[in-house]
Image 1 (tube, rainbow over the protein chains, first blue to last red):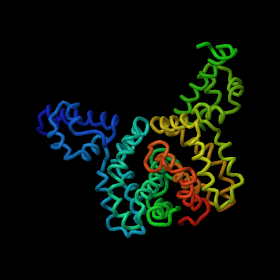
Image 2: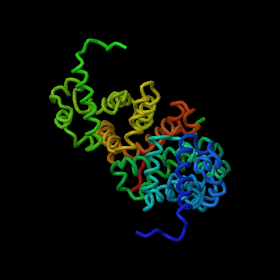
Image 3: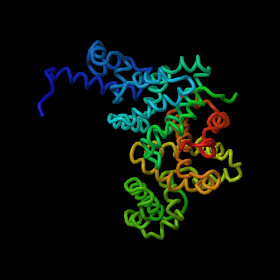
Image 4: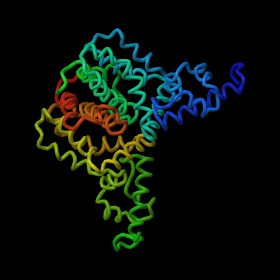
Length: 196
Length: 196
C-alpha cells in the first residue's frame, strides 16, 4: 500500500497523538473536566491544531471514541417526529446507527468504555446526547431531567442485549419490529404519566 | 496473616484451579458447550471434586462469575407476585440484588463479561434466568420466547445506566421509585398487547 494523499507525515502523526492523548484524558477525567489545552499539552501540539482537525471538543470526543456518526446528526432525524412518538423516533434513530456498517467501532467503544472507565459513556450521554433532547421534552411534558435518563434505560437495554450480548430472538428482530415492541415504553417515559 | 482454617492447602488450591478453568472455558465456549469433564481436565482434578465443591454446573458458573446470589433464589421472590405485576416484581428483585452489599462482584463480572466474552452474560440469561420464568409467562400470556427477552431489555437498561454507568439522577432514585417508573414497561412486555 502507498501512503494516502500528500499530507506530510508529521501532521498525521500529530492527529494520532491528539487522539491518543484525548482517549487517555477523557478516560481519566471525563469529558467535562478535560480541557483542550490539557490534551494539547499531553500530545505535544499547539491547541489550535486540535480545532484545525476536530473543530471543537465534541468533535474530538466523537473521533476519540470512534463513533461512526456524530450524535447531533443522528438525533436530527427526530426533528420531524410528532411529540407523542418522540421516544419511538429516538429509539429508531439509535438502532439504525447501531445497525449500520460503521457500528463495529461503536460497539468496541461501548464495550471498552464499560470495562474500563464508564465515565466516557456517562459523559457522552449526559454531555452530548441528552442535552439535545432536553428543551423539547421540557416544553412537551416537563420533568426532562428525570424523563430522559429513564427513557434511555429502555434504549440502552435493547442496545446492550441485541447488539452487544446478542440475546435471541432480539438479534433476529428488524428495527421496525423492535420499535413496534419497545417504542411505546420510550414514548410513555417521555410523554406519559410518571409517578410522584 | 496466618492461613485461614484447617483445610489442607492442596484442596483449596484445587477449588481455585477449578474456578480458573471454569472461567476460561465458559468464556471460550459458553455455558451450554462447556462440560464439567472438560473443566476437570483443564483444572487437573477428578470431576467428582467439582460436584463436591459446587454441586452442579450452575453452581460452578455462579461461583465462577462471582454472582453474590444464585439467580434461582433471586427469582423465587416473585413466586407470590400477581401475574399482572410479574414484570415489576422481577425488576424489583434484580434491583434489590444489585443494591446489596455483595453486588460489587456482580458489577465486575458484568463489566468484564461485556468487555471480553459477552457469551457469559448471554448464557446466564438464556440458560439460567429466562428459563425460570418461561413456563409462568407462557401460561399467563403466551409468546414467552419473545416477551421475556424484550422485558429484560428494560431490566438490563436500568442496571446498565444506574449501576454501571451511574447516570444521574438514576443513581439517586430508590428501588421503589425505579419500580414505580419502569415497572409498568416490564409488566406491559410480559402481559400486555404486543405487535404482530
